[in-house]
Length: 80
Image (cartoon, rainbow, N blue to C red; front, side, top):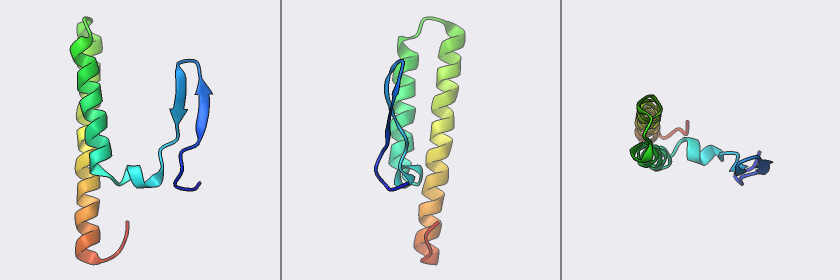
């Protein structure tokens, strides 16, 4: 797959396949975490809210891992 997003119709709208560069971008994951937290704030079901906040925390973990990969890349001079 190229770096461009492919589009696929779904019942809820359009989903995009994530380009590889987003996978290694901490900002991408932090933005997803913020979106998940915003959704959680609007939820009234306590279990659904808890689950959405857990998803946000998982996105934060992905952001930290992506940041670690960037630091390693910069130190080693080798792409991940």
